[in-house]
Length: 150
Image 1: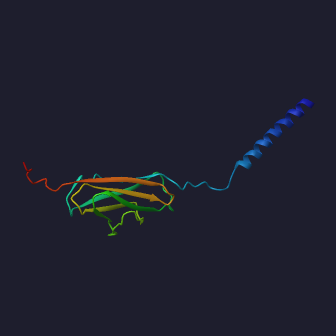
Image 2 (image 1 turned 90 degrees about the vertical axis):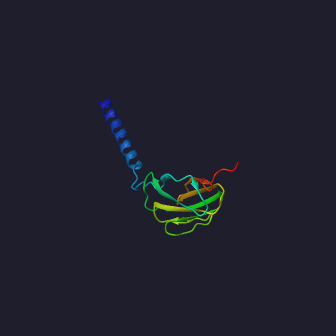
Image 3 (image 1 turned 30 degrees about the vertical axis):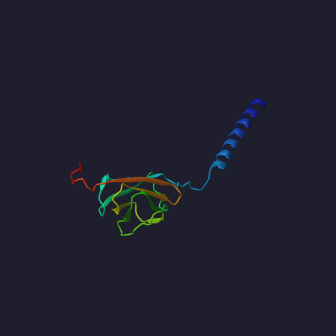
């Protein structure tokens, strides 16, 4: 009879320990994921441009998940050539300045201001410090219709 009582006490102790562990492990706080990776998707962009010509770049921020408090900002840098980049609402960007984006689908317009090859790097940054970079480049299209000199 002592063995049976001991076994019951041991089983009861094991069950009590398991219940205590379960209660301690439970947390009433909801775990909300806030940081999701994202990318900048664009439609294909022409590869040749002439001075004064404007190219449209259709953009969409594609997110892995959606946290409503996430905000996005945009900036650009032009390592080659000279031109102007603006947002579809008319905002003209200055190189390396951050501008808020109030939507995830937007259009950029690049206007060439030189006859050289042109390259721009567009950076999208979220409110958690994650950044995505896309590079766009254009060759000068001037002279395509002119005959080559011998």
